[in-house]
Length: 482
Image 1: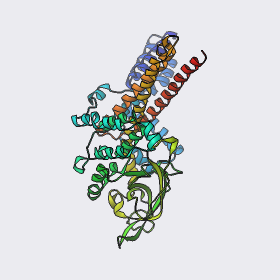
Image 2: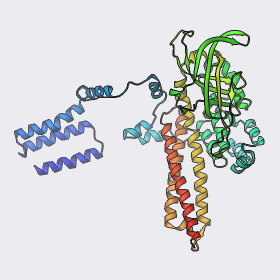
Image 3: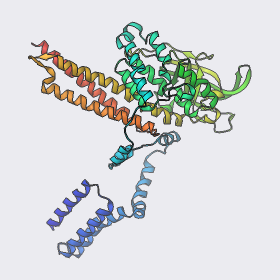
């Protein structure tokens, strides 16, 4: 019998290693129990016990109706009693995108042929030319020293160049005056700018991903598209999107800002709209915007829209010169000079036509935000992180090459090489994740897993910065002691 137990352990480990199907386990268990009985290693009673302990569970796991009835359903019922019921906003968040090829990664059985079948991300000749010419010129116009110490902003010349060359309309369709670049081209531009000037990267990436243009393109009425998109593409309108609240962060599900459906006077006539009260902070471009994208919770106590009393989160576009809109004092977080600031309003009346998508989209803002702002986050934030990581790794590697200690470049010391190797390896992984995420958006997948790409890039970026500080500090400390 000890030999049979040894065979059982070895075979079980092998089946686990190859991630065998349940049917393989069932077949092995039947053969193993039968062999133990035939060879006399197990008597009648022992064989029955072994069959109950090993064959019966494998049988239940293999036959789907039995597995669902005897195992899955009881377990699910227990968890339903323990866990809270899923809210409509949580369900919308789950259904707002796809999990794309990432689902195979988490299943433990990724099909690499499927991934390779998507092909590499590529740029069109127009996109490549923009990256080589216009983007290169913009990099020549800016640097972090001048934007931080001289202008505390991008220079007027730089702002005008950004507007004239269409940097603010890279994702807007050509029929509305934009460039209609791919997500990958957008990512390449942001990454390159981030290696030169963080304020320039943020100023270009926000209107192209986290601003109202993305929502207008997918949900706006044709009248809204014709009015706003050409102006946004030319830089005549500077957009911002007000989502973050002082006590709710950027969690749209719990924003306290409220818009009550009512009738009011607009342009001399009575019209249906909202009395909106909001308080937002940390809004990129909030201090210079001409048009404000606003997320608020719509309430309809008098049922003027004919539906629920609480339609839900709604997104609207409001000109910043509209009466009642208050643009607060500019934020200056950590001396970062990209334009950022608060805005607020109390009982500001806006017509129903200012809702992105009109009346039909009242209450659909949560799904809108989850689906299309997620795509921007899969592009902009990873791209800027990778750009800053590239310049940091390049600078650290160059410093390690020119800084000498004991008549030897410190980059040749094994301890320094180890840190540089980790930095380079993490950078390679970050860039691969960036490219794959942007390519997925181009293929049409608005993936929820953008959060993983963003968080993964942030984690590795912070680790790289720690190693960079430790490396520079250790070198200087060793020199100071000599």
